[in-house]
Image (cartoon, rainbow, N blue to C red; front, side, top):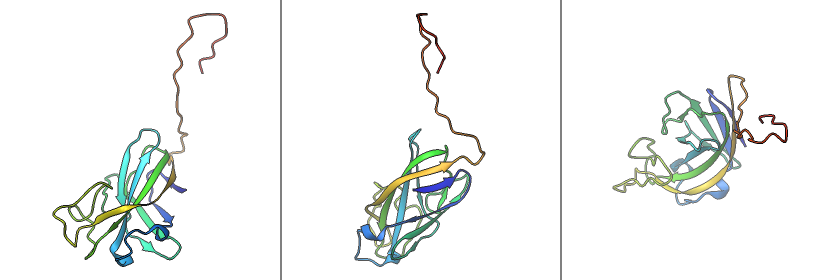
Length: 160
C-alpha cells in the first residue's frame, strides 16, 4: 500500500519488472503511467512520475505535489483525503522517450497518431493496489449517512 499526505510530495516503491510486457526494448525505453481513482467521489488523476529508477526488485517513483497538476511532469494534487486505488500501466518507446503532449499517452486508452517511433504505446497493466492519502490539516475525514426521522412514536429516535 502506498501512503501519502494531501498537499505534499510522496514516493512509491512498486514491483514492475515481474510483470513487464514489452521486453523487446531496454529499461530506459519504459515509463509507467499511474491512474489514481478516489474511492469516495470516483475522481481520477493520471500522472507519470517525475522520474523513475527501475531496479531488479522494485521501481522507484517520486511524485511532486503541485496545486496545478501536470500528467507529464509528475505533479499531482490528490484530494480529497481517504482511500484511492492505483493502477500502473507500462508505456514503451522504440526511440527517445518524450514525456509531453502528443508523444506520451495521457490515459491508458490514449492512442497517439500518426504512429511514430518517438511516440509511446500503452502496453498494458503491470500492477495495481490501494493507496491511503491522509489529511494534512489534521481533521478527520467523516462519511455521513442521512437517516429519515421516523413518523411513529413507539421507540426512541437517536438521529444516527
